[in-house]
Amino acid sequence: MTQFIGKLRLGVNIDHVATVRNARGGAYPCPIRAAKLAEDAGADGITAHLREDRRHITDPDIDGLMEALTIPLNFEMAATDEMQAIALRHKPHAVCIVPEKREERTTEGGLEVAREENKLAHFIAPLRDAGCRVSIFIAADQNQIEAANRIGAQVIELHTGAYCDFHAEGKFAERDAELARLRDMCAFAHSLGLEVHAGHGLTYDTVQPVAAFPEVMELNIGHFLIGESIFRGLTPAMDEMRSLMDQARL
Ligand code: PXP
Image (cartoon, rainbow, N blue to C red; front, side, top):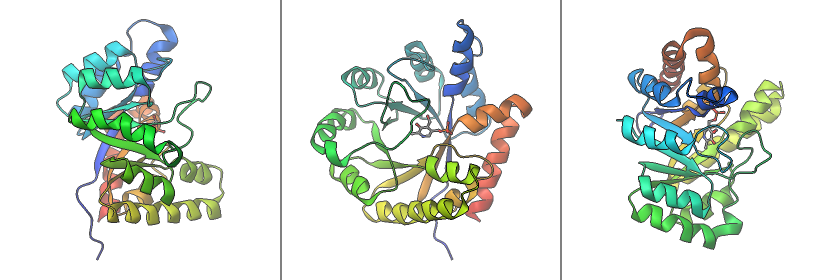
């Protein structure tokens, strides 16, 4: 029988509520209201990515989330001095370090940890000292996982974007190969003592195989849930995701 490491948590990423708000300027719809709704609907955490260009989440959003939430905030950020100072001011429950390119539409790949080991080790040390759980967003790649472990990250989040893209494009052989890589790397990371999370691009169609990996403790899901909530509301959209995750764990 599969031995799951623990209950699978659902982190809801509310960036795209801010995307809609910012399309018009002004204050509506409010991502903090969405985060509180997600909290009431049973989210285990809220994820928000403060990008360098502030294209969705803004600094006042982070202030408001820190004040309003009773569940953990997973603060996604690039490894820059500016973001480090903001994280150290707020001391969120978790900080997830992601790569960031100005021209990208979303976080396209995992962080290159192996080549930046020294720099990243120094970068995350004060965050850890401040009590934040440091997570590194990486591809399912053994070198990157080993490097994340060496620099002192407590958590890795594996990028599921390629798996989801292959599924959407009907490239099922490639999808299954990526899924196998994700499965193996979840087990490998866990064997090193890292906590394993996963996310990016997950939908009702793609969530279950990832949720079924016994070492995965948290899935962070945003774009699809916020999109689906246009049609049915955030609570029912989340309920279905949660029930698919729970079924996959049975
Ligand atoms: N996890 C990380 C580290 C991310 O950067 C993102 C996207 O911001 C997500 C999860 C959620 O991805 P999606 O919005 O595609 O569900």
